[in-house]
Length: 397
Length: 63
Image (cartoon, rainbow over all chains, first blue to last red; front, side, top):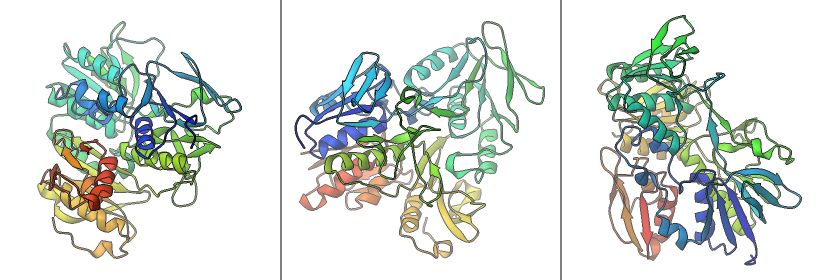
């Protein structure tokens, strides 16, 4: 690797930063430039809807790395700068601050929050994807009493729980009749609904927001059954869209993400990691895009390895995610497609602490932990070892 | 190699124990427990792997 070789990484969140750090720690000697649209130093997003929303952490607590570490690694951070285009022939990224030439390019632009469709923006209407979103939302909560959260997935559930911690009255509206919790699907729906209701959340499932009420400032919403919900603040947690608009016309394949191979290569010397990357599914048919912190980290480590060595690294990354609602730690590992039952193998579901195997027919396809993290880890390790009789195994809590 | 952990940032994923159970354990809430604060030559790679895979980046290594 010559010292002139340079890597440009677009996206300064966990995927982009981990790629940069891993390149350097692996001995990469070229220049590393990380371009970030937001003005902030790299920060973790998972705490935005957890500790930061609940008011337990400051922004600094969410920093990915101390500024001294970043400068010691010799990573050039170009913040407050948005990529606007890519010329694969000239190997140039266009940005709002000019052109950046690259030998290797890593695209880690993530996703943006989908907004509730409406013509003119109302005050009091929020999404939660960035630190600035969190700042705007928490400032707006100061004078609020009632909040409507639109979207009852992982993010919407976490937001509801954080708002309850702040003493607010919360209505959680979900389009599906069940609470679909990320890759786990509806398997945990009755338990999640119970958890929300025990904590005072007003659950409105099988409904969606058809219209917002209010003139300058939001006053509530009309739901699809015609009912009205009064709210001082509305938070939309209704999905996300990959940030690929800047790649239009680049020749790269973009359709719900940037398509790449199992080593994250979208084209020669161009890679994608994290939420934006669409990769071949492990099953061999179709493709997947995974929006989890752990996935972004593992893809970043692999792409850094590929760039450093020239040999493609294509690890089988099994999706893992965690959440925390009202002090209950929920963890999931596996590919839950088709899973219809959850078999408790440790703990006691009635006591609110268990580990369950998700079964598709009689085959275990994933592990779920509910407030039992050590037993979850042990079950996960046995699951990973590929034991075919995992459904019969007894795990020690 | 010196190892430090940030229990406040830990999210209880257990990645560190899966990578290096000689160095890390978890309490009943899943929070990291450091078993040894130094990794000798034989454990450097697994310590590095644990630090790299931690989703909260709650493990810091220094020489």
